[in-house]
Length: 149
Image 1 (cartoon, rainbow, N blue to C red):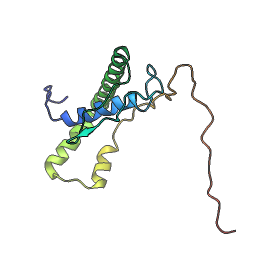
Image 2: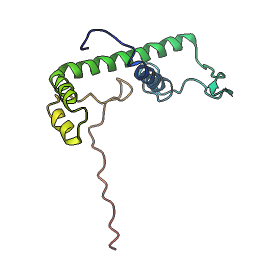
Image 3: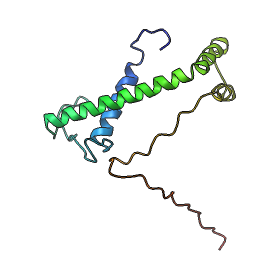
Image 4: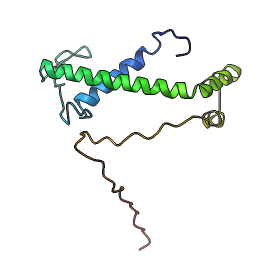
């Protein structure tokens, strides 16, 4: 973003984000196109720490949808992160300058710098289907009973 030159520094972050996005789609049911279905079988035989027995229990056409859903999740998250950084570039630059002067910051110093962060609007509630509307009913308020008899 700053130097307009991609690096390999984020390789581990990309790997983790990709694994999480794939799990969101295949294990957690967080995809409107796939739905609340667990895909894939992880009951393979481990060998030297690897799971070579992983079997896909879905078709090539479903695999293509999974791949597209994973790609969409990653692209949307990347765009959102970029926009957050772009909208808060002054805060980012201030953090860089302060770290170059001090190298280490205390919690209070970080909070002061980040107090200027511009918040994003809240996301719409996700229900898993355009047919289901989010409830307007709030969560319950639970008050723990007193032990004072």
